[in-house]
Length: 142
Image (cartoon, rainbow, N blue to C red; front, side, top):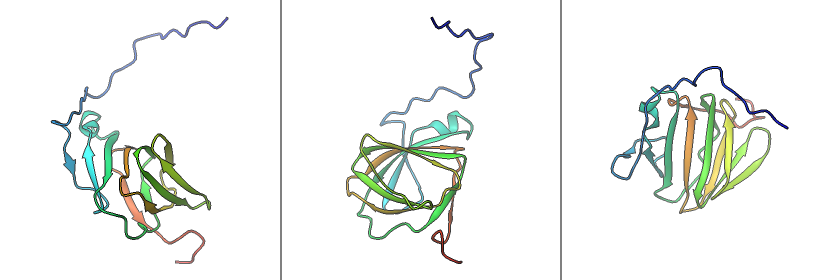
């Protein structure tokens, strides 16, 4: 029989409670002009430790984003509607559909190659300020 885990002390609460609603969550500038980004108030509540946003297609994706990586610890996505195709430096191509998730470690090179017109997902990054760096396709000399 398993014994219950007992904490020696109460866990420390860091950050502030953040409740995003249609009235409080607003659209903010983002990385791609064919997407719109809704801030879910997590960045301010965690003092920049984490960011959560909804990304939603506004126009059809006309060409791949190009190879890039993000300067962060991790980028987590969860599909809400539609799908997005991504190719990775290890040669894998993954289609993330509604109801599916993907964790992309920071620094992993990838390229978004296609997405549905109704594409929408939740994106969480640690830390909140996630940089994007363009790079050559893996295996190609720069």
